[in-house]
Image (cartoon, rainbow, N blue to C red; front, side, top):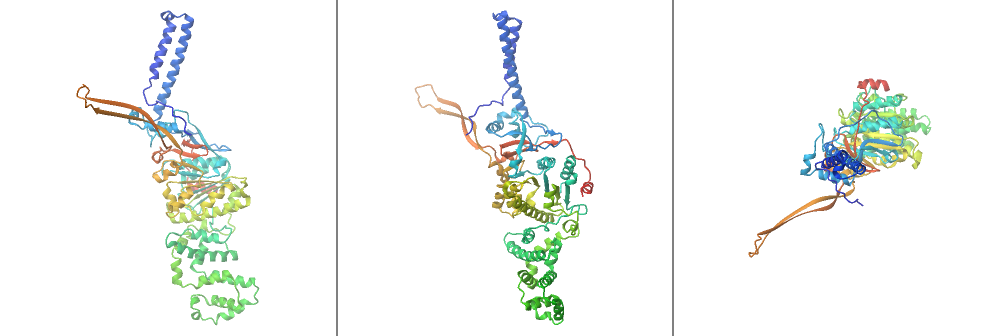
Length: 618
């Protein structure tokens, strides 16, 4: 229930100073000349003291009013010396709970008569009133509990609104708290990497820092996004999930998944480590994989002297009599025919043969969207990262990162090659989701001994079907996801324009922090969750009526009245969130709606070359 409104006449001249002057004058008169007021000295001095106290009180009220009016023009940026972590809470900045009185003050400060009391601060951006209306009371540090953070956090903000500054603050605390930290950065922000390196060094954790960066493949840690899996079909899903799924694209994606799954299952049973390059090679020509599988199958069945028998039949093979296999080598056809004569039944072998038997024109058509994607992912430039050699000590895996309590920064260089960044990021997140699933299954729902903090900047670029289960089960595995993006449209684009999927995703975040945004749809994500409050309005009415009575001297009558009326409104309007100054935000936390300012950090990292950082941590 909304508290009763108490009038706060804050936008007016400070008349308290005139009252204070009157009280001070009386006090002075009582001290200098008590007989003038016909009072004994003792009573006069006591009354003078009372008047002095009243004068001081009125002066303080006047100064408070002036301070409020001055700060309505905007609050200056504030700084903290360095990032310090609290063992039980996450620091977001300074601010205050956004309540009914702030909505009322904001409404009154936006009226035309109030403008003469507003003085803008030099360099202020956006609407300074949004924070100024809370500065009548003192700001306090704003925290959210680490337990609540398991419900995950969504951060929304336009470019240059302070989103990266907030990310640095949160990541720095996670590093200082000695948590496992994973940062997925599609752009490859050099300043963010410098901050992570600086905080890791300051926390004595430089040996825990690992960098995967597509812009610097020779200096980066190696990482194969499809090497780790629970079941082989995950490999097919990670690669096929990168293809369009809207309209006719869904049919082609399903065909591609079938081919990929056959290859993945065969490689798994053969003990081959999947890489993008290897899968791309089998998509182009599946014949070598089929030969390897058939040979391993015959060996496992312990068929006597099968090699000599197949070689004996090889010369008798006429490829033209086997129309579906005429493009294959004689040895391959002889191997298939031999197995067929033995009556060997094997599902994987049958699927490999089916893929090999497709008409080449038809096969090229249904894999047309898959092959260019794999060509980009198997490029020589990315081979040092995405195709590590077996036993490579620079290769990284998520289970290893969890176990070692690592700090992992992933720069995807999306500005230079967005397609590759999206593909690698999506596969990487799918691999991460799989690792989290295994961690969750091993630990159950009782919670984890360690915290794993995942920060996904511009996460809409790498969003996929894997994020939904991550959000629902990750908290039980000790995973705390903080996702950063600019607009709701970016999230929809990640789901190929599906608004329902985007709404479902945003609804899975327990905490929302919103800096300045540019679209009304995005602003409504938080505005629609703000509480309803009552605001009071002054209603003025005037009326004039002619008099029809000729026998009187009254020509007309008039009336004027003023009354107050209350109405219920949302505590936040979308327009408020679209006018936030840089570095300011509204946060919906377990403690309610908070208005916060994000600090600048005095302890700035050294601007050393990225190559130097990579050389130091590789």
